[in-house]
Length: 386
Image (cartoon, rainbow, N blue to C red):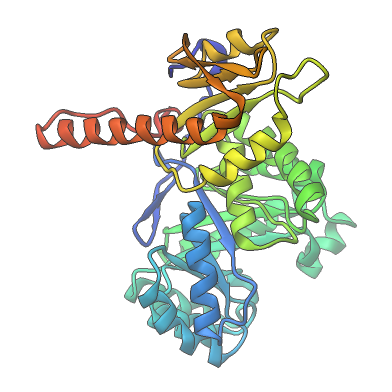
């Protein structure tokens, strides 16, 4: 059950493409999901464990903070032991950037204007070139340059964009073009306006995010409003949901935002009702259980869980599998939009999990067969290439 209708079409902004390690960013590449570790980077074992949990959640790129020499020294082991590109977060100290590039970081998060003298900037850029590193210019409303605050009086979209373009020019003057830009703010209005303005002013790939968004619940809402607004307008090539929560939670929310807009597809997408007195089973508990039981699924699949027959059949028409609450302790199971069979209430969870796993196994087997036979398969991230 897939396909796009005209009102679901999102035309992505045309941006230059760069690479963060093996991950393409910009152009027609899928929008990548990032997060950042909160362990001490110098503790390689803890940092690797946290990155691996983010990998299971579907992360594409992970950023780690490198405030000291012990952290950049640990990067050697971290990069070797994980499966995703690592971005080294650098502030002010140019030697940390050079060390991180040598240690295998795929990208350096810096602001060239804050690195120091022209010679130090040149050394960092040369290190990035020598070790095939890209760069992220990270502008933040909370740390704007003094001359821009004096010029504009406060952080505003013009100040953020001017800062970003000033830093970009430094890299371009050094004939370095493998960079992306972010202009983050904790204020949704400021961040969205700055990104929209920057998107019109250049073709550099953009890393989008609402910085310091807050707790898991409040930050998810705030990020969904800001990032959803930008993504719907076609702005954004890579993204992070910044939450006061574990990195894997940021990844899961990021994926949910992309799946909601049809920009990327991964795992089981559950369409469920909010529940009411008509429900034939406990919808809230059922959905929570199924989310946990089906978290291991990576192949895209849609599943509707509706408590009664008012909206159930209609929602099931548009999902791969569905369940509608019925009477006498039995519930209707839909397959590819059509009524298929009923299932006893006590067996429902196990039955649905089995159906999903069976359907996914069939999809994966068919894809493997077609690949072996040389059949061109559709891209899994069709919408993101538009």
